[in-house]
Image (tube, rainbow, N blue to C red; front, side, top):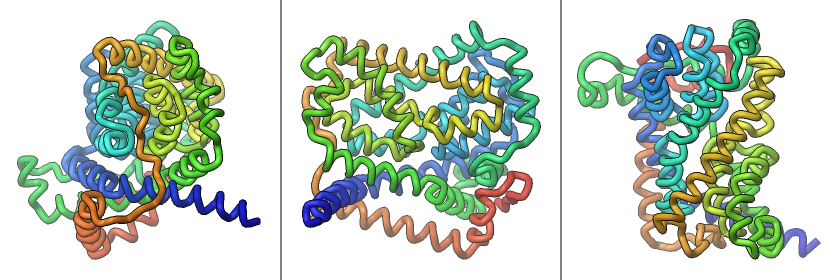
Length: 386
């Protein structure tokens, strides 16, 4: 029993240590995301994404990067704009960008893994969208899209439908005047709190699973599993197996970054880390939502096409970054024992916790709790008050 409690304490210690390291980055990322969402309206998305042209895909990627990082909200919003007439390919590009090209993901990756991984994410992400669009153009048949549209129009409930349907963006005046207005401050605070509410479970699960893997799984297992003793094979194997590990981990949104840190320290290749992080859109709960939203056949097509393009993007990133010498030589992701000391991390955490408190107070004083209750409901009942 003592050994069990000791092991559990070790796992919790690692999980808390990673949480303490990334707390300020989480607050910063969600604040910046809230600011962007406060001035970018969701209302025009369908009109702006009529086809799979390069222009539409670029707009879809930009809109996705400016939205919430919650995987469930991204999937729900992608179905919503598809039902309103947007191209299915553009809707999927938006969905991918919403979870993999957002500010908070890049900040947390830089803190836990290193800036090279953040750069790789923002190089590999657009590459995967291009590969995905090419795969859809070659392989996706109109009949399957129509089947998916018919199923989507049934309006089967998924998760975070209300959150996806909320649009509190301020659209009058210049960007700076919108952000400086009372409505802009309110909208930022609402997006900040609701984004936290939508992904905290995934963040907590990711930290707990990462802590457990770091504490309980011996390093020799990871080294053998990721073929560390065979460098060339490891570079090919990492992107192939990374998404599979993600699928069975059940953790999506930005909660998979702590797991990526454990896998990197364990020996997975650089490209394998990127493919693993991309795979938050094919974890088992999300695949089940695809089945409900679009039917079995389209869910299977999305799984196959997403997996293939994630692997390809991971391999290209591995080769490209290796060729220019940007793959880190040391595996030093921050998976350490809990230790709260007076250092720059603690100072940053205190500063950004103060910012979070200001935003939460604004949220509470401007009708936020009532809107929070609508997050998991159908979008038709999710009101907004910019």
